[in-house]
Image (cartoon, rainbow, N blue to C red; front, top):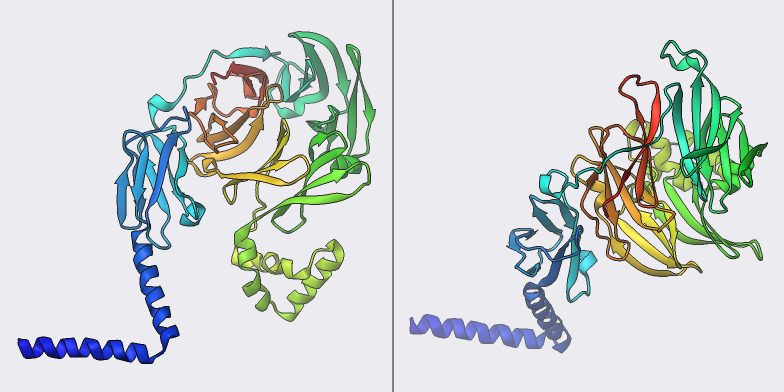
Length: 454
């Protein structure tokens, strides 16, 4: 034993001498690696978990990172060692499971996580308020509506015959204007109108199949005049906010799954990008797809560059997607203005970006409400009266609204809309409005509303 011990000690001494002979630089590098490995193994992620419904800490939430797991304490706090390349996962029967990549916690001493209440938990679903009828006429099929200042504007098709439920019976398009529930004007419009569009300038546009009209209000009366359809598509429709001499709009690239949020200055006519929202899966595979293009496909990409002005390199995945079934979805990235902030939602990559009115980025928070269990995100809605945000989801025909906090990224308890298969869901002055088929005749649709309890 003594001989063996001395031989091992001699071996260690020899190894140390050998390391010294490698030079001080190599020795320092090895010691650095050893200390880095030790420090990494001792790192811990600390944080606090909140409910998106009440913005209060929640306990007993399971937190997992790789093979390690823990639970939040009474104050919603947790501490867990990280596992490389493994996300943090938060789960509970009352909340939707969320996975957050570790890189989002980089250089943060303590993190805050907000969980979205699950609509599976009965106690977390807010019961619907009584349904109020806004507009219901047995011979009218309402298909769109909007709010113009203090008036409600409704588009509907009227039956040419009282008998028969065929959609062919709807020939005459009517525009009805109500103020405090009373009709103040009503006009018959050209047929084949598709929808209403109210822009930030408070201009009301009627979009048809191949034509366009603008609705002009003159006191209690309105009149309809022709409007250039191309001008509407190019200049009016993309705008989502204005401020003094500035216009904020979102430009969708043709063929390429990318959205450019831009700011335009009326004074000098210059336009500047605020943020690009991309389908990262598409752009990640571009290099490999371009290398695999054959000569005719490269020529097709060059032709598309001449036609669109977009670099032909960006069309590689698009050209190959017809038979590779790649994900070429454009990102859903709406923009909104609230007070002196521009909010840009990036649902595909789960971020909310905040910009000041000059287009400078001021903040960003994580969002997770776009991937709830078996729920499909329909859209984000802003109440034009109080500027509150709501997220609108649907599952098996049932529609839910949740209040969204743009400061924290927290999403509140779901409010279940009474009638399933609601259409054209909008929020105004704390009420949720929607179009719904009548029980007697599915081809006739009425306008209803419910008071939102939050």
